[in-house]
Image (cartoon, rainbow, N blue to C red):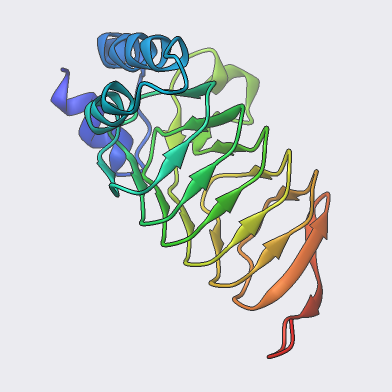
Length: 187
């Protein structure tokens, strides 16, 4: 692995991803093996997830298919559930806390490309982490953009694009996602 490019990537600096192609290929191979598993092959499922992710709780569950860039930058907490078709572009850390429920087709994007077209020709990019705190529920097809933190107990409505961080204990929805209301003791 090109440690210089990797350290720049994880550190939020501009880097060229080309030297990290072997790391992405490693993740693609593990994802392909994982996605081809029979649903009842629990032992191999657990082993592949341990091989892929930076950290994964024993009782976290990832439905197939699943895709990611590197895998090693993803951390899944206890009782976290990723439904079908989740994509995590983990150029920066993606951390999901305890009991996070991720609906089908959710995408998490940490990569940022230059806005300036001349700079974009360099193929350099940078990345910002995503943090999903405990007991969050993301409806189907939610997209979470770089640098976002979603606070504990928050619910994000289906189809939303979360471009800015959300506080704890709220319901948010839309494109871009906006807080609709607070969640009180009665829900």
